[in-house]
Amino acid sequence: MCTLPVQVIRDETFVFEEEERINRQERYCASSCDNKVLESIVKAHGSSSMRAHPKNPDWTIFEQSMSVSINAALGKTVKRQLESFAESLFLSAAKSGTASLEQSLTKWEA
Image 1: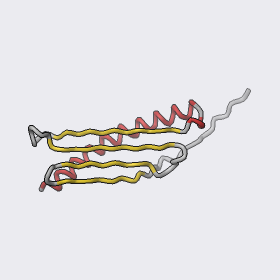
Image 2: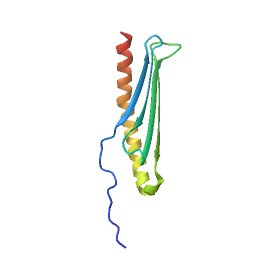
Image 3: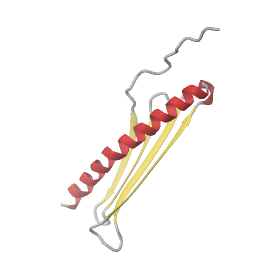
Image 4: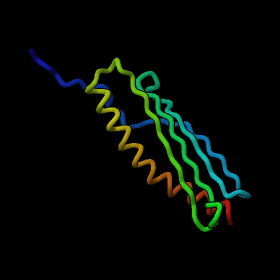
């Protein structure tokens, strides 16, 4: 039996559609996003919010979530690889997203 490596996905460009809502009076920012590329294989949804802490307005409450659904027809190995990739993408986006949301709140606060 001969097994050849198959490269299923090599395009590292993903497109997400994002919606962001900002409320300056309540010092609140929320965003959500969904992938728009390879939707038949992977469905990803993320959301995050930042708001002033109710007891200390100098503090910020940040919440973030991500869900990924991968088509099982790809097989367990590919599915596992895609899940690992999605996890690393989420962690990377969490870091940059935090900075972006903080910048948005600061901008609207001024």
